[in-house]
Amino acid sequence: MRQLIRNVRPLGAPPVDVVLDDARIGALVPAGSAPGDLPCLLDGEGRLLLPAPVESHVHFDKTLWATPWRPNTAGPARLDKITNERRVLAGFDVPIAQRAGPLIERCIARGSLVFRSHVDAEPDWGMAQFEAMLALRERYRDVIELQLVAFPQGGMLTRPGAADLMREALAAGADVVGGIDPAGIDRDPMRHLETIFDMATRYGKGVDIHLHDPGELGRFEIERIADFTEAAGLQGRVMISHAYCLGTFPLAELAPLADRLAALCISIMTCAPAHTSVPPVAWLLSRGVNVCSGSDGIRDAWTPLGSGDMLERAMLFAHRFGWNKDDELAMAFDIVSAGGARALGIDHYGLAAGCQADFVVVAAETLGEAVVDHPLERTVVSRGRIVARDGSFCGSR
Ligand SMILES: [Zn+2]
Image (cartoon, rainbow, N blue to C red):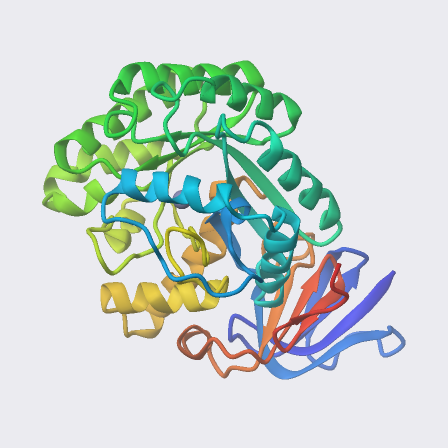
């Protein structure tokens, strides 16, 4: 069906009417010049039109969303947090669907329509987490694209049964092979990388590695990830999440590695955390490295923080890096939108004719204002249908 969105400004450009052909953008024409007989889906009244943000790194399976507030009980070290989480979730009887479902709806209401969620391959729980997330993927399939990562949160080589569970999850429909600190947690970086890249090749999947290992160790692992990516022919399908180590070297020293990441189309995901070193995002982008972002954990046993709003995440980038100029705020938005689409291999993304009609109409004067204010007054359109208004998902499931 052909219909119209009237009078919106794409990323702040002069006003246009958007002609929709079913779930796709048919054309953008100057405001007021579209055929008057087309039904009007939405009158934007001059508001901003943005491509729907992309949530490139989240952990829906472990959220405590939509349950009573739970004070954080985790210890300071990463392994403390992992064991604390296992303890908290083991004693928690609210099913994943009743926590992650409302959180997915919250994220949609804030405008995100493409997601990559890591799902714990935890032998104590077997396939339960994956089955719950696969069911949620089906439940929201008509609105969002949800990629699932088989993620060995508690270790893979060091946790008997985790690798087999990852293989089972990949066979059952998980989209991406996860990894975690090949040295820091699994204590054998080469065997860890060999194993996950072997899985990726065998099941025809991409790779997404949580890498917190610091300094020279982390840099060594990124170099080896590049080697494995090249050997496996997985250019454009590998992401390194967090990569804190990249924030601890002089830029000149990092240049050869950055150029290699760019050449192999390996994406860097950062949440722009305030408490630790972060990759030098603007510099990486200037060297052609793709950067994307996500919320990571949202109200879970690791942290009570997180809102699921990727416009707010763009604002956090501005805070973290001291970005004040309009072009810097636009860069922050690009990271949480087009950067995510590139990283996740979404090829129908954007505001051009032919792209999927996934966008957000926001009450803001400029892109910079949308990032800074991230107003709740926004209308979310998925595949040519309005799915959320003013911060609420239409038709909760
Ligand atoms: Zn994570």
